[in-house]
Length: 342
Image (cartoon, rainbow, N blue to C red; front, side):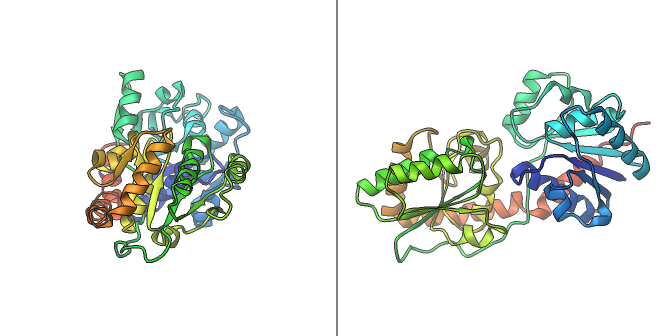
């Protein structure tokens, strides 16, 4: 089967990373794959030139881009199109592309649009996203396929010998709640708790976060490192990983921290709550609550033994469920359900 893997965003967040993972997994499972994306996007950077085609869309629903996509799909003789994100979904379902009935839309978050109904099937990355799609579009065929990646296993953390290193990773966006995390670190400083915080990532909230760090006089404790790629060694160097998001439909970085053997504190929101088995594998706290986050971090640092034991169980679960081989198997099984439509 020949599959066109479409992702038009230029960013470097979870959606963009998963488009690359889909390409790699499909190729590994024996499918012929052509990835199509922006000339400055992550697909152009990560995919072999002979397996990539450039397509820049001026705006959502761009008719010229739709015609270009139609030509690419015809030339490649694509049996299926897998579209990641709203712009790709809108283009695949555009009447001038004529690809709706052979297109599967991967829905990575809750911001999906009515253009999703123009496609054959929706693929949700979590039970919560699938439920949201079904509630809004009950007649749309919907499947659930959890995200996956090439997880890197490290020995489970031991007791920190020095000032604990707290860390987080992600796009510097308001949804990630890094401001809440920084305020929690300020509270711990005021309580006399020694620790450092490193946040790896970049994005539109960088200036605001730097301002907050200065206002709280945390320059000696909080560092914005910028993007770190690959991030495996960074995550493994931490004593605790914190996901402070306000919204997180999945949260693959949580699985990466689990595989690295790093204990986790996360907000109790849809994606991480599912991955962490509703608190069985990590400490969950309410979102938007720096007090609760500070309390949780302080409690964990005062009693490490059960924290590390839970990290062992979390690591085993992540490697079994969210690793590349497990993801490839699930993806192949799902794709094989879709016979090309004439």
